[in-house]
Length: 301
Ligand SMILES: CC/C=C\C/C=C\C/C=C\C/C=C\C/C=C\C/C=C\C=C\C(=O)SCCNC(=O)CCNC(=O)[C@H](O)C(C)(C)COP(=O)(O)OP(=O)(O)OC[C@H]1O[C@@H](n2cnc3c(N)ncnc32)[C@H](O)[C@@H]1OP(=O)(O)O
Ligand SMILES: NC(=O)C1=CN([C@@H]2O[C@H](COP(=O)(O)OP(=O)(O)OC[C@H]3O[C@@H](n4cnc5c(N)ncnc54)[C@H](OP(=O)(O)O)[C@@H]3O)[C@@H](O)[C@H]2O)C=CC1
Image 1: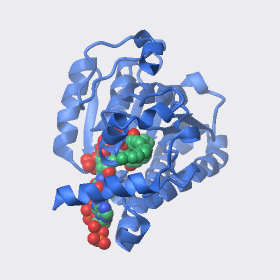
Image 2 (image 1 turned 90 degrees about the vertical axis):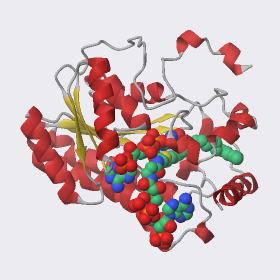
Image 3 (image 1 turned 180 degrees about the vertical axis):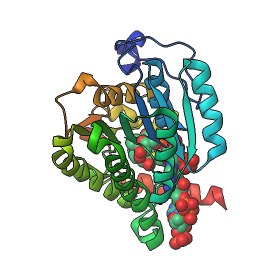
Image 4 (image 1 turned 90 degrees about the horizontal axis):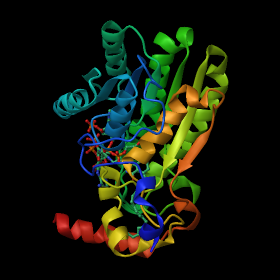
C-alpha cells in the first residue's frame, strides 16, 4: 500500500551491500563539499560507507577509520573507483585515544586539513538487561559514547579549535521510548545526544558546529540485521511506521550531508530525526523482541 504511494523516483538510489551505487542522482550541488576532508569513523561499512560515498561524490576526500583494516582497504578502493576522490583507510579503535591521535596525524600529513568529523562507529546487539553482562554494557558505552567524545576531543584540540569544522554524530531513537532489549545502546546514544548540545555550546565560538542525526531502521545494514529488521519486514511491523517502510542508507547520507555542509550553516546543537516517523508509532513489544532474541540464541547453539 505505502510502497505504491511512495513514488520510487522520490527515493534516492541505494544498494543493500557495502558497494557503491551504480547510478546517483544529485539533489545537492555536486561541488557542495569540494576539496573538503571528512574523517568518518566506521566508514568501511553500512551507513558510514554510504556517507563516505555521497561525500566523495560531492567533491570531498575522506578518511575511513575503524578496527578492521582489511575491510577498510577494500572499501577505500571501491569508493575511489566510483568517485575519483581520494579515500585513506586507517586502523583505529575509538576506545583508544592514542590510535585516534595517530590517525589524525596521518590524515593531516596526507591532506593538510580536516573539515568534517562523522562519529558513526558503534556496537549493538539485542539483549535483555538481565542477560547483559557488566562488561557488555560497558563495551557499548565505551564504543558509542566514549568513542564519540574521544574522537571529537582529539580532532578539536588538534585542528578544529583553530580552523573551525563540522561534527555530525550518528545517534538513534532507542532511548526516546525505552526500546526493549536496548538499555545499553539506548543509554549510550542518549548520552551522545546530550554531548552534542554541550559541545555545540562550548565549541561554537571556535566556529565548530555539532549536530546529530537519529536514523530509524535502515535496510542493508548490520544494525538492521542484528536488531530484527528482516523479521519486522516480513511480519508487517513496518506498517506501523507513518511512512510505512524502512529507510535506506543514501537517505541517511543526505541528512548527514545537510548537517555537515554549509547547507546548514546556522544549525548547531540540533538533532535531525530521520526515521519515517517510526519512533512515534512503532510497537515496542517486549514479548516479540524476547521471542526474536531467544530464537537467535537457539539458532546459535
Ligand atoms: C521480531 C521483531 C519484532 C519487533 C521488532 C520491532 C521493532 C524493530 C524493528 C526493526 C529493527 C530494525 C532496525 C534497527 C533500528 C534501529 C537500530 C538502532 C540503533 C543501532 C545501533 C547500532 O549501533 S547498529 C551497529 C551494529 N554494528 C555492530 O555492532 C558492529 C560492531 N560490533 C562489535 O564489534 C561487537 O558486536 C561488540 C559491540 C560486542 C564489540 O566487540 P568487542 O569489543 O570485540 O567485544 P567482545 O569482547 O566481543 O564483547 C564484549 C562484551 O559484550 C558481550 N557481548 C557481545 N556480543 C553480545 C551479544 N550479542 N549479546 C550479549 N552480550 C554480548 C560479550 O560477551 C562481552 O561480555 P563478557 O561479560 O562476556 O566479557
Ligand atoms: N542500521 C540501523 O538501522 C541504525 C544504525 N544506527 C547507527 O548508525 C551507525 C552505523 O550503523 P550500521 O551501518 O548499522 O552498522 P555497521 O556495523 O556497518 O557500522 C558500525 C561501524 O563501527 C565500526 N566500529 C565498531 N566498533 C569500533 C571501534 N571500537 N572503533 C572503531 N570503529 C568501530 C565498525 O567497523 P570495525 O568492525 O572495522 O571496527 C563498523 O564499520 C551506528 O552509529 C549506529 O548506531 C542508528 C539507528 C539505526
